[in-house]
Image (cartoon, rainbow, N blue to C red; front, side, top):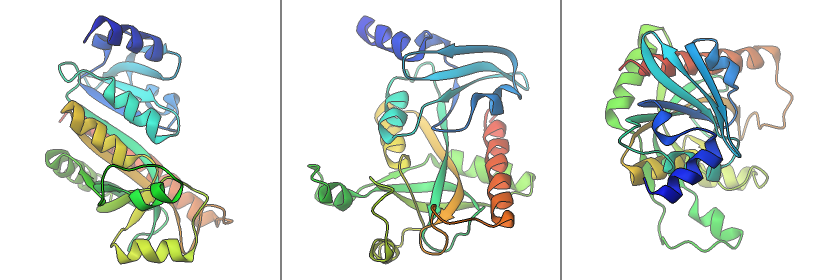
Length: 247
């Protein structure tokens, strides 16, 4: 890492680049306390943009970073990492179902596409003429499914598309996604995988299904069983991510 990049890292994270663990778990909105409760020898850090905690989970070092919500912050967090320090990055997020998934499901994103047409709709220039998919590390997919099965968690491999906006969701938008055989949407996963690929770091994204764009959009009033199902899946993907630390 160049001297300039090391200074950038310290400013953004409030920590030295080499202090990051070989396994990094990042999330836009999972709170630090969810992970710090599982860690021994905790060390907290906070920079201009990112904050996190380092510690030991079952004799293995791990770092958790709260990125804040946006694809830019998630991808910048990944791009800042050094492959010689970080061997794998696990992303924890929320996604909206499009088809073949229900509120409260747990998924691992095997492929994340970037909704280029949606970007063009808002006037953003895109160099690519066609949509491009970004993929999870196959080994991490297998390890995640095995860890989930051992805990009776149904973790579903899912094809997702990362979209630009939460606002412009309607029936025609949903039908267009179905035609492309997209199972879920989010905001961050595609650029998370793209950044990990650029840095040559193994990556996997685990998400809980928080809503359904056709049957139960995020602005709906959710029933108590639905809220409990979401809470259960939120906790379930945390359990899976913790087990990946030791893999």
